[in-house]
Image 1 (cartoon, rainbow, N blue to C red):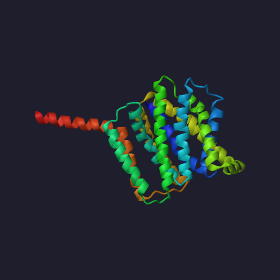
Image 2 (cartoon, helix red, strand yellow):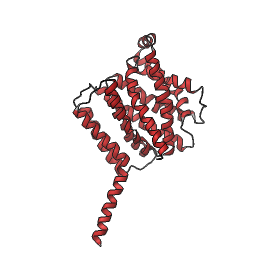
Image 3 (tube, rainbow, N blue to C red):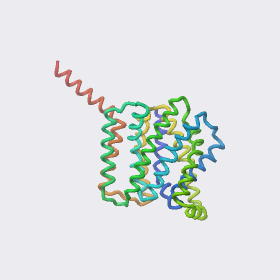
Image 4 (tube, helix red, strand yellow):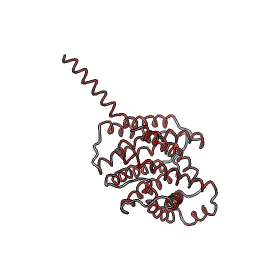
Length: 306
């Protein structure tokens, strides 16, 4: 990956890391599904004023919206609203890298390499440790489960993104903006039927500058800027290579959660975090390590024969 693209990846992880703090503030102001609808209303209304509709079939845009827009964020917003600490959510959500690898193999027929398999096992053990550890900051089983489900949806969305690119279309900012129209509908319907009209009316009546700031950040920074850059990277590199780059997101997320939300991490959770990060690092650098190890073995065998 070039230096320019590496810098773009750092911008993405910084935006998305602080995004979890914004979400935590947002669910204190409004119901989570309503917040999701508001986010994509802002994306659609602001973006469509400046961005031309992409030449992408409507069914592919709808599939993108259903996975990366509605599926991921309906589950993530609900997870944080139902007791998932923002800092830990930023870490657990990065299991999307592992689900991306699995779905890439199943749908795109991309081979799963040995380091990726080891990475999935290690990271899976780390997630299990986090889920079963004593907690310094309370975490609910429902919040944890919804965060894992959000990662599954993101992983499948990454594959949809790559499918769009492989078919000759540009999955860029145009897709991010115009697919938002599809995301608004399920968000609005589920908010109405799950959260209820009274909660929606109450949130609108008490809307303030914090709520507006949350929606603007989610729409402009996290959605339009973050995902356009993410789509650019997925268009130029394999999904299994790009997805693990977000392992820096939880570093930003955990630090921001400690500073802004006073979230604390227990020793058991910290150990689980280390294990998950190790798994993600193996996924990024594992192929290089395997080649070095294989080269050392072959070199010793050659010397032994001589």
